[in-house]
Structure formats: structure tokens, C-alpha cells
Image (tube, rainbow, N blue to C red):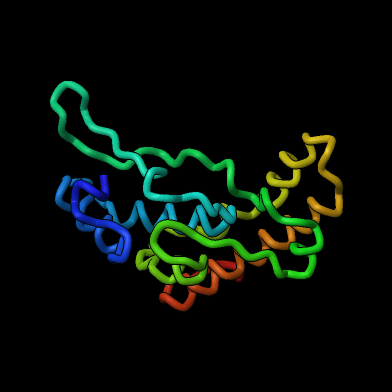
Length: 170
């Protein structure tokens, strides 16, 4: 879709995508992309490339574009991290498609009015529960993922606070 709107390598993909959504009449496109960036940041997704965005439109009328729900998360939740990297806080990943590093991409988020950190209260426990279903995943790795997830949440909360959003219990 981005190629249809002359958004390509070397251009500002974020701005181009937002303009494309606007031209297509997608309601709240900026807010929805902000949400995508936050979700990808919280789950350490390094695979949100230009082909991992989708739009849905009315098949009969061919109008009414809206952003598709998020999909293809196989490269998230520290799937390439080692326990040692997570424990030492040195696991790094590149983000896509808007900026190279997750912190740079996170800085693009403008609208935090929807953000509710209390909804993330048991997020790290849910992650641990899911990881615990895999008999090949040890407790040390799970604890390291929980620690990193807490750090990701704290970073998102700090940015929300910086942008003037009140973050309860933070």
C-alpha cells in the first residue's frame, strides 16, 4: 500500500503512511498507528515491516477503509533473546518500519489519551503464563522476560507522563 502512495525507502515512512491513511479516509489513523507502535514496543516486536500493516474495506462497495487488527507477532516477546541478554539489560532489537530503534519509533507517538497503564497490570504475569506452557522454557528466562517487560512498560509510562498524560500509580 505504501508504494501506491510513493512512500519508499529513504522517505519518512511514518509521515507517508499517515498521509496515505488520510487520503484513504481512514478514521483516527494517527491514533491507531500510535497504538500499534506502543504494542510493538511493549512486546519487543521487531517485524512490523511495511507488509505487516493491513487495511480492511467493504468488499461490496470497495470503500470504508479501516486499519486491520494487528497480526504476525512471531518475532515478538524476545523470541531471539538469550537469558543473559535480558538479565543484563542488553537485549537490543531494531524496530520497523518507521525508525531503526524502538526508542526512536516510540518517540513518534503523539496521542496518549487512550493509554491506560492500569490495563497492563498483569501483562507480565500473562506473558509468564504463556511462556510457562512451553516445557522448553526455563524459569530464569521467564523471569528475565518479566523484568524486561516491566522496563518496557516503565518507558512507555514515562513517555506518557512526559506528554502530559496523568499515569495513575506510576
